[in-house]
Length: 209
Image 1 (cartoon, rainbow, N blue to C red):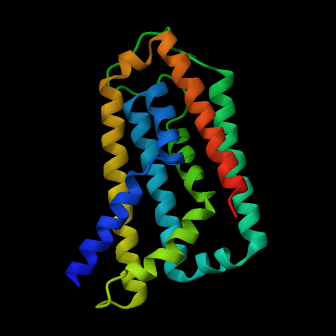
Image 2: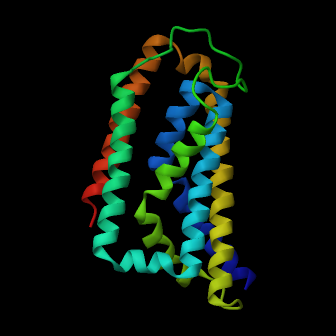
């Protein structure tokens, strides 16, 4: 069983490292408002994964994956949200770049503390591809020595921990270079790139069968 768990962890780790909407959302929040805001965004993202994990173990995610109509509604809502975040970045490139930059662990300059968490949660909760990923892949990776539900729950927990560790490390790297990223010219360029990337992910989510 330990060998199967190690192999499954390796697969999940590789999938976690692939850049996706989560990384774009974290980049946007961490660069704009600092380490604390970035970490709250990571907490929202992992909460979204736990939500999908609970639904998967309960069998509800399989119903979503099997229902074309429900899947389409959730997919379009998620795509619209990513595009909304992208348009926000494009409309306000470099906003706040000329202001003084707080220390790496400082609190966000503006906005409620819960906003970052809700942003991360919405980015994952409105992504039905996670339901398909969990229902399609986790049963095949679950250790044979455990009951199917327990095996999938264990792998969901592993995936959540890997995601939290990877994105938190990424936030800390961004925070160390934040003074560079918040220079007006660099910030404008980064906001435009992030905006285009988020819109691109939104379009991709909307058009993926």
